[in-house]
Picture 1 (cartoon, rainbow, N blue to C red):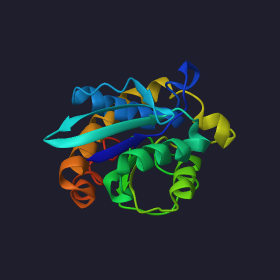
Picture 2 (picture 1 turned 135 degrees about the horizontal axis):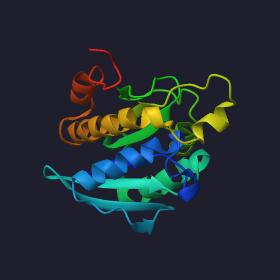
Picture 3 (picture 1 turned 90 degrees about the horizontal axis):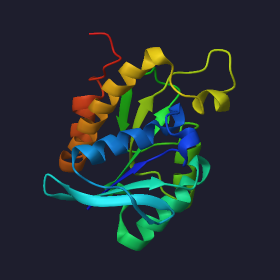
Picture 4 (picture 1 turned 180 degrees about the vertical axis):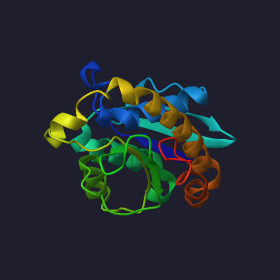
Length: 192
């Protein structure tokens, strides 16, 4: 079984913010595969289904970003996932809007949600899919990530979410290396 975790903040106030692009990506993936993520448990919304014969569990922590590790640990402990079977999908201010980056493991890179997961699991050997949201020019970082995308960015974000659906699917069925090979260079925001 594979675990796909989307990071974001709960509630309608944050629904379309830059910080919630992880939620948007896993919701698009779930919809594409007919998986409902409306069950409550593990301090999250979750759902499970089959993706090309692979049992797949999708989790949206409802603990707010900075405490995402509490929800992830609850699911990992109760269901028995190994970090190698987990992909965390989150925003990244170090990547331009429309750029994605898959990695097999690594540091939190300044992302509080990833920091919380690494701290709670005492392990950083899980894969991650980072989705570029751009960096703030003249506003505080917190204000920037908790703001909605600009109208001129929304089309690129939609295109990026479509690529994320495919990338998550490849990770589920063929692993992180194949997903990296296919999608780290295939980004709608990257010039042809």
